[in-house]
Image 1: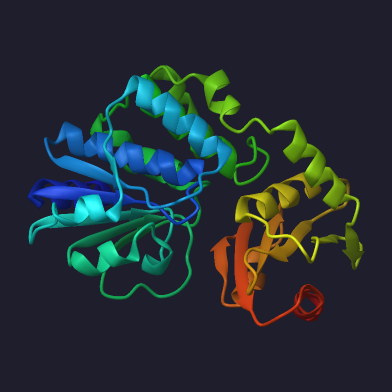
Image 2: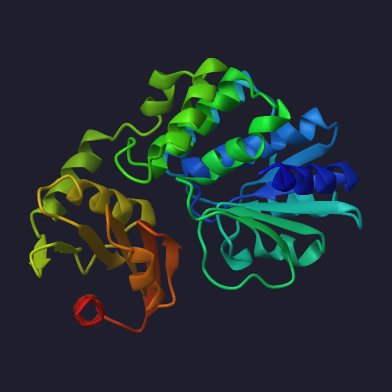
Length: 318
């Protein structure tokens, strides 16, 4: 981990300024990773900008952003605002996704040659970029905390709170992907003043959303007794986060070893979210050119119906 810390710090110190971004449809793990890298840049006297291009934000991100806005002064920009600040000495750091095309602004990645990727997913063989990937950690937030554990870098209570929320969301309240190292990272955050109640509050569910999810849960079907499937309403468009929350809920039930939620994420595209406590769902999603963490993955397909996607998934599971 020490070498990884040196790689990151060396790149930051050599840069004139740093542009940081997570994946599209930002979640708490990506946001926590962004602000922690911004804090490290500030510690090393480098100006940093967090790129946020999403037009629609998840409620958890809205809450966390409001919290940060009141307590910190991180700079969030859209690509058009950031474009004029880019120069030959700029550094682009992408967190919580390996894919540049999934980053908040792919256009920005094409403008900056000096890049670094920090992620806990693995989609394929890295090409042409420096990268730090560890699929054994729960989240990118945990990865960053572990990388800098021996560098005596501490985060303020507000940044620590958002980092904590990233770990909470990616471990589904410590029910999956949680190790002694995960809890050690949580311990550090709490020691620095992270507000546990606030971190959990970011992900509180709206009653209408909860009812909506549970109506869908009643449509659950089982395959080979251990795989739970939910096929969402064919006439509705769902956020990826909604599909993920459906899967997380299914994992609460007895005998469910893997859960899959399938629904339209646009008029032309089907999304499938996959969660498990013991089965490598990333391998399953890779059959559909998707991927992710071993127990937390997804894919997107065009030109297929919901029924066809379910049938294809069952064929893979055979």
